[in-house]
Image 1: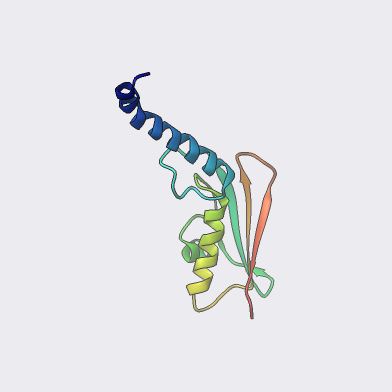
Image 2: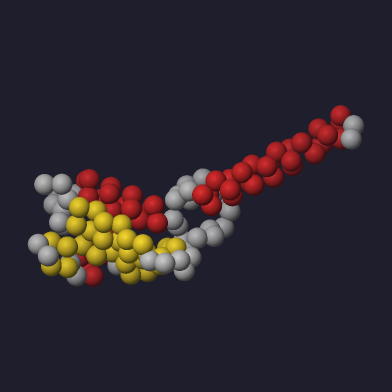
Length: 118
């Protein structure tokens, strides 16, 4: 390959390398923040909030967090955890605890539990 031929292919090689690196990064992290590729993760989740041992209703959970109580999401479970953490950090009143049950791409169910610090 001559020097001028290499310069011609260099932008394409760099762009392809960046895509491959980004794909490998996204597959190993819990976030989809820098990916411009189609999402390859599907997360089925359920959010439950509890106050004094009583489960909040569907409408209360959906109003508080701005998304459906039970649904699927095209993003990583980390986005759901960060949503709950940020809402609870800013809201004036808190439930005692919030539980997110989720399955990523059909894998076994996992649970994230947020507890209020009182």
